[in-house]
Length: 351
Image 1 (spheres, helix red, strand yellow):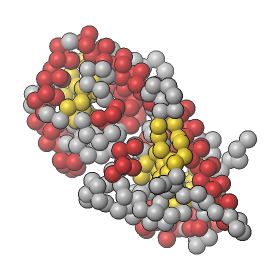
Image 2 (tube, rainbow, N blue to C red; image 1 turned 90 degrees about the horizontal axis):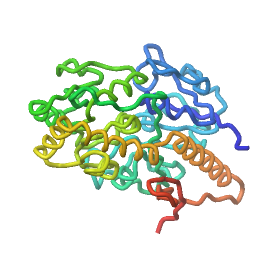
Image 3 (tube, rainbow, N blue to C red; image 1 turned 30 degrees about the vertical axis):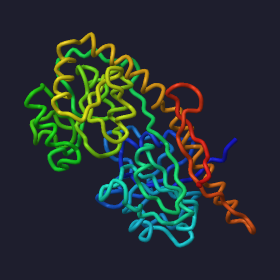
Image 4 (cartoon, one colour; image 1 turned 120 degrees about the vertical axis):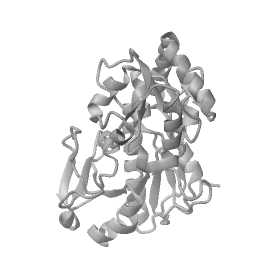
């Protein structure tokens, strides 16, 4: 039986942290007064499990830990130096990279430059684009779940768009794309701050799948960011997805099979109008979207992958710290291990 690990991490993306807390290990999250960015702890509307513990940031130095999991560049560049001891900063460390690079899609060097730190990406595309230099890397794709019995019915002849603070995040998140297409196709914007653009506002995470199930399709206007959890959750419900064919989305959405992925706005408008007019087509695409999500984004696979990454890295670092020990440097990559659509973790030595 694998030993249960005590892992310090930060609250950066609430929904992702909730899914991550399904692993068979203990997660410890620091909190500060007022719960500023990264220090929110067990906040929000999510029902946090018992293995996610809060600890005041000032007491982190007193903890016995097995590993540290950074979840933002700030965690790596600033936070660790404020709350961790020098000994804790030499523990087995991992950096969870949620996004693709921004400054340059191909030439941005990742801020983590320590070959003892494993950089874990959430999509193969993200790892492809980041220059991680000497650091070993891994990919753990999303894993999601939705409330039992929630299935697509698509009775609203409209599309749903789920993006937080879209008006403040500009072209990268596709604010201009949304505005142009919303003038042609009935679309409802959902998410924090969406009221500023006439949207429906924030919907609690546990209630979102049932709401999305009522829409004819989900539209993702984002040009450049990571694959959204809401896309995976919508697909698991059986909602067809219409999206820009960029980043990892181009491998998830297969046009005419489980939705439509295009780079031409006129084509996107035509596809969405077609789904509004033809609920039977939306039903067929949505059924395939659910099959895709069950095969690729299952929560059990996600938990197993994270367990393998965490326990494997901790043991590798411990072997390296023994007298005469060494740790193999390389990559973990997602490949289909056999079945169509399945994903797994396979070791790879560089070069």
